[in-house]
Length: 420
Image (cartoon, rainbow, N blue to C red):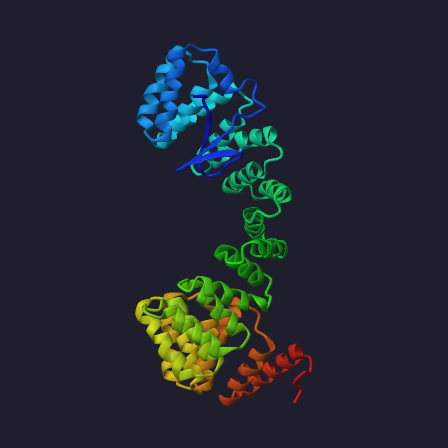
């Protein structure tokens, strides 16, 4: 039987004869000499070893193939085809370093054997993607009309972190095979990582036109729309979740979008689905509280934030949010307690200091409110409204001179917008 080149099963790059688990390519016309021609020039016993190795590979008996091929190579060390087959057998045995060495030996002996460059690139792309780039570039040079080889080069560049470099091979693959779903999807993914969301959106739409049930492409489209703050993002996430209903995080993302669009009932319904059958994490509870706060449902918000704090008792921002919610309920003692806890955990929470000052003012504790405003004045320039509150505190305390000065400062900053 004539020897035939065996390709890794991930991609077929030429007309193939398919066996279970193996894609086997015809001999490349561009090679400096075809494997068949080489084999006809060697003695029959050695040719029998090649046939024996091929039969073993067909049965996935890779150890037997290795034995036969090493015997052949011991007699004929410069036959590229034998090293190619040995590399394939080592790959089947997951002896990656040996496979890499044999593919490198193959291309050194026959630089025009495109399949060897492709297989070497495939071998490296998951483990050493930067090293996969060179052999795949050579494969593109040898197989310029093959879209799959260009796609693989883009994939290697993307995986190695060269996102900008990945764009051209993905675009070329798309031009060569416009009906292939993989190229526009990969291009959309790369563009989204480069924060080129409008272009990514177009590519994801192309991918979905080719494969409407693609879960990753639908999620990619939803994320591209979300980054652009487009209202359609909510419907895109909803379409994605019909395909992938168990994705809890995407359900929470959809709930955030409904919250932004002030569709509070849909937001709560989506959170209910996200948390069904599981203990809601603090972030989910915080989001639920945000919905209740937007509805001014203070009691419900308090209950949810307290549940979140049972899971994360030292989360300063949760304590601050609970304190703010108590303030809106006019439960000033509870608000003060939570805000003090928050500031004890993180005294840099300027917003919590502002809320604490507001709590003191609303509760009629004007000296404490002034102390907080003094502290805030060291952190940031007091806005006009702060001077008005300060003036009111001095007024309540009977400090007329200080009150007048504060009112004058307020009017200066306010520029007579609230002269009354």
